[in-house]
Image (cartoon, rainbow, N blue to C red; front, top):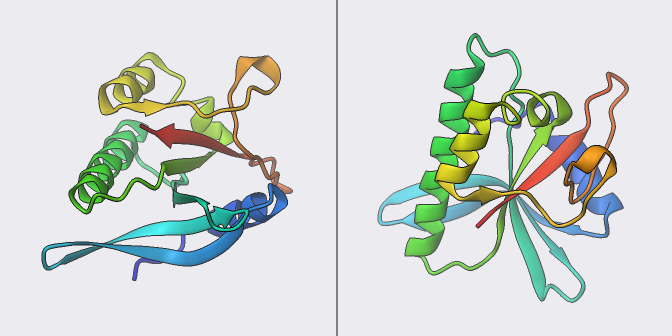
Length: 149
């Protein structure tokens, strides 16, 4: 299993705060003989509503462009695997505010989001930004969400 991202536990707290129950940390998706790991699976209500969440820190990166390419590429791969397995559970990406208002908000980030089919989530917050749930850290980091189509 892959190592937890720095913001993994922050995302867990945000989900719980928003009324979600964590079903799995590191949900496996199988395609043929390959196993992919999505960071979090959570459910709400009587488990009739569930989501998958991939956590991306966008930190300690020598190149934000390379990290953007890796993050978007991973999502394309995950979506392909979920489609292959006929899994209809929505896939979300959780990112810190500095990525949400940084590389993801720049022209290149926006074009990558559009081309990959990532859309912003359901609730609108201050400043015209869209967030599903947020959780703040002492260092000012805040987790924001984008939903995969």
